[in-house]
Image 1 (tube, rainbow, N blue to C red):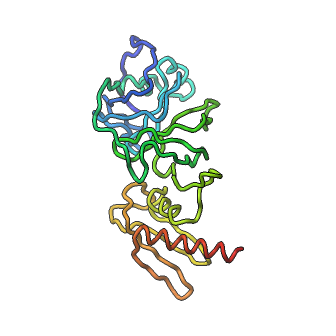
Image 2 (image 1 turned 120 degrees about the vertical axis):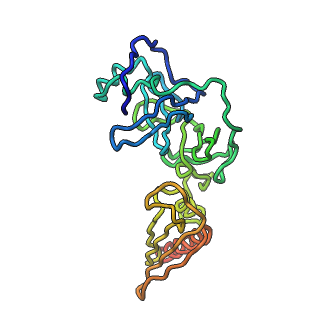
Image 3 (image 1 turned 45 degrees about the vertical axis):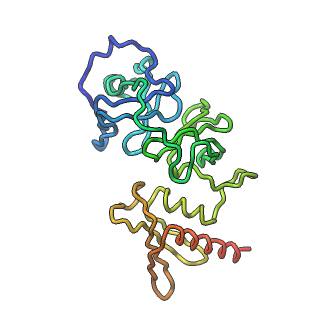
Length: 263
C-alpha cells in the first residue's frame, strides 16, 4: 500500500478497530503488488468479524479481506512485515463512522435470511446469520460454539462469509453438507469460485458456463440464471442452454446414476 508520509507519532495508540463500527475511507488504498485500488476514498467499509486487541479486518472492493494492526502494534508489525509505519497505520486511511445508518438493514439476500441457521463450509460447523451486508454479498454469522481461527491460536465467535462460504443444504442430524442433490449443484453453479465448471458424472463429461456475456472466466461476479451446458459424447458434443434449475437437476440425476452404478 502506498501513501504520502505523515506524522503519526503524535497520534495516541488507543484501539482503532472496535466492535460494531464502520469505517469511511479518507484516502484510497493502492496495493503495491499489481497497483489495485483496494479501498476507495469516500466509501464505507464494514469489518470482517470481530477485531482483536492487536488486529482488525476490513473487506475490500474485490471481496478480499485485509488485516490492519491496532495502532499500538504498528511498530511490531513493521518488523514482521518489512514495511513502513505510514503504509499500514489505519488512521491514515480510515475514520470511524459514528452513529450513521446508511441504509435500512438487509434482512434477506440470495435465499438466506437473518436468523437462518446455516453451515459454514470452511469451519464445518453450524452458525446463525446475524447480519447481511448492504450489497447482499456477505453474511455475518455467529457460530453455535467458538471456533479456532486458521491463522492464530485464538478463537472467534463471529465471522463474515460470501454466499458460497455458507449453505442451508446440510443434514440437520449429522451436520454434513448434502452432496449431489439439485441444491448442491445450484450453489456450485451460482456461487462457486469459477463461472466455468467441468464435471464428469456417469462416464459423461459436462462443461457448464454462464451465458452472460459480461462474465469473465474465473470471475466471482455476475452469475445469471441461464447456463450453456456442453455434453461430450463419443459421437460428438451436444450444447444446450438451460436454466439454473434445469442444469442443477440434470447434474443431480447424473450423480444419482453414477452412485447407482457404483453400488
